[in-house]
Image 1 (spheres, rainbow, N blue to C red):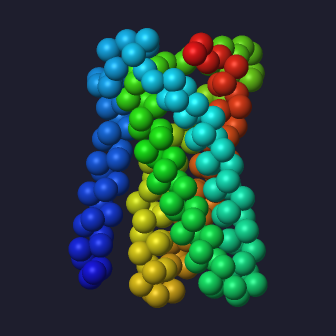
Image 2: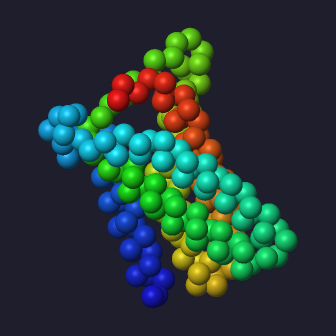
Length: 179
């Protein structure tokens, strides 16, 4: 695969994912006409997403340790696993939000501001990190180490922040689930 094709593919994938998530957040489209027709396994997806995010956090931290110790093989394997899990997260996230289920955060006072700060930064950075991670992966797998390092300076901390805040958002919103 040449760079031009890879960049175009990454751009298309990033835009499509962003548009799908925006449509789901706007509740323009739902898979199920009412809550009673939603399969029971769907209600486990938010917890699964938090587990995936937590696991990705750990994998990313171990991956950093491995690359600092020049264990490129372990670094590569851990990042591929984190990428696969993040992809599964994205599928799970889309399935859950396609149901039309809505939950409102019920906290009050300063904790409410903290929650919305974390949520908003999580959402914005999640949108930004997808193309950065895809470009980082492409560069790393293409053995373009110089470009990989430049990209990872941005993609790694953002990806790590998104995985950590994904767990925090789940912990904070889960008491308000009504399903």
